[in-house]
Image (cartoon, rainbow, N blue to C red; front, side, top):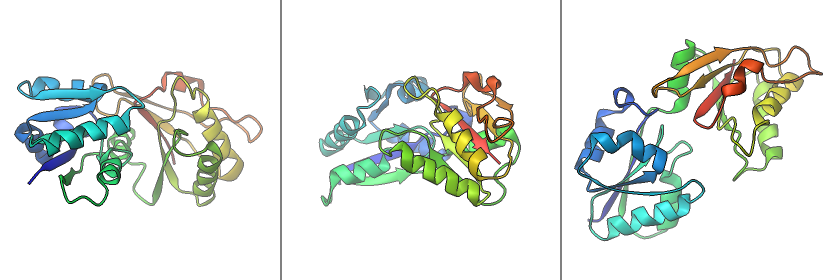
Length: 230
C-alpha cells in the first residue's frame, strides 16, 4: 500500500528527536519539507532524496509529498516540533480528501511549548493555552480575542510565531492584550528551543496598562522563537 509518513522532528537537534521519528526517516526513500527543516536532518540521512519548497508554499509541498508516495516511493514529510501542532499533517489529510491512498501515518514530535518551557524552568505545570500570532490563516482580531480570553482565564500562554519581518510588532500587541485583560504577569521568551545557540530571557509585559510593550531585551525574538506568559 502507498504510504506517506508525516514526521515531527522536534526542536531541531537529534537528542530531542524521538526514536520513532528517527526510524521513520531512516526507512524512507524521499524526505520532503521546508528547506530549514531539511537542513536539520540532511547530514544524518545522506542517502535520501530531498525535496523542498519555500515558505508560503505549504500546499505545493504537501502535493509533492502525496505524489511521491503515490509513485510508490517511501516518503516522509518533516515538520518542526510536532507534525500535528501547526504542522503539515492536517493539510495533508485535507488535500488527500476521501481517497484511501496513500495511507498517511502521523509521527508525533516534541513541540516547542514543551522544549521551550524546559529552558524556562517549569511554567506549564497547570492549565495553559497555545496561541499562534501568525495572521496568515487567522485574522488578528480573532487572535486578539483568544489572547484576551486566555488572560481573563488567568492561563499560562505559549505564543507560537511571535514575530516575523512582516509582523514586527505582534508580540508587543499580544502583551497589550494581556495587560488590558489579565493580572500582571512575567513572560519569558525562548529563542531556538533546542537548536544550537538556544537562549532565553525574561521581562515584564510593560509597566502599566497604558504603556503595553514587550521588554527591550526581546528585540532578538524572530521566526523560530516562541514566547510564554505565566
